[in-house]
Image 1 (cartoon, rainbow, N blue to C red):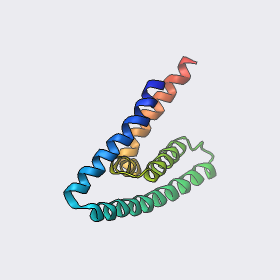
Image 2: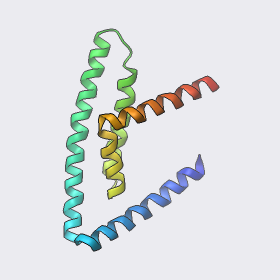
Image 3: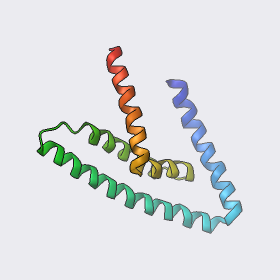
Image 4: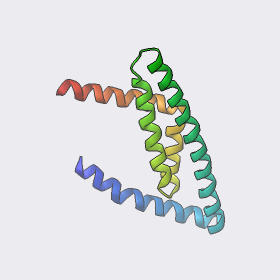
Amino acid sequence: MLPILIALFIGVPFAEIYVLLQVGQAIGAINTLVLLILISVVGAWLAKREGLGVLRRMQRSIDSGRVPGTELVDGFLILLAGALMLTPGFLTDILAILLLLPPVRAVVRREVRRRVARRIQII
């Protein structure tokens, strides 16, 4: 796990810088900054909308006496997307916006739940 984290902490910033430079050369520095700000605004709006939706679904689950397992995983994924939006760059913003889209989040949620279930069985 440690080599993967090291690769991420070193590789992602280099990839982000490379993409920023390429986009900056293609459309100009000012346009690149405007695009980054626009993506951040759209991402923040989407994160707020999806986060509030998950909170409402979680409250309905609790009110009906169910454990909000799906909603908790969705909440974690939305929180992760919000953290990725804080990282400047196009790659992390694209990944964050993808995580904020319900169909993409459903696929990731299934994978997260499958991995967690497998880890629980190992213990």
